[in-house]
Image (tube, rainbow, N blue to C red):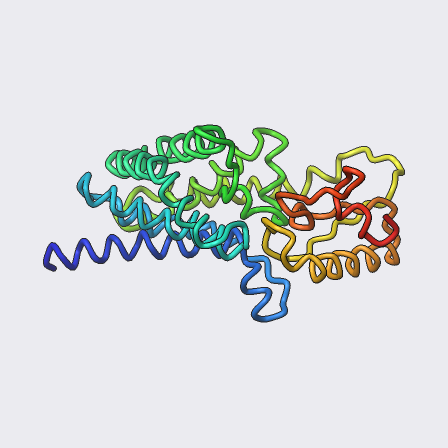
Length: 284
């Protein structure tokens, strides 16, 4: 195979991995298209394998290109499909966080060069990437691998090591799958899926041991609408969140939590100095 085709295949693997991650993180676009509440977080268990395969044996320049393409899918598409940012904001996010993902690509490339033992480097590198991206240069803890596991048993291990342990488990599962390509020892190939299975078992068993006390019934309202920047479309937003809040209250909720998407980023104040939405919310 020519070098051009090999590079194209590597870039394609990075792009595929990024798209799969974005689907696992924010499937809301699919929900709007089908009307079905689909939980696609399990896709993350295999979504990084194409990225590891693409980086294995790649040069530094090719790895940087793979990292950039992966970022467009994993961070760019997830934030745009999730309605977190507008197109200008999407482009800005891609450029702004590009250095983070280029460094990540080099770390993961280093991991793949270590063969089976690289699983430790891959897990540590991904965790460090998310830790730094959430803090430097600004706080943007969005589109993490751990977010894909919300609603799945694996999320239960977060009480042992936080969201970063969940990320490490997902990365380990993916890295082990990618080892099939180099015919690694079966023990290393099984290590990641075994860790995933143990984490899922813990997540299922752990809630059974919790001592709970009677308390208020809490309902959460998610309007599945893009985060607003201005008051444009405010009537529709209020109507949607108001209807969902009323339905939640009728279902027995005593405390209702509304998504941040219910409030624009620059809430207009009334002549009395209070946020406009507080007066217009039903019962407010």
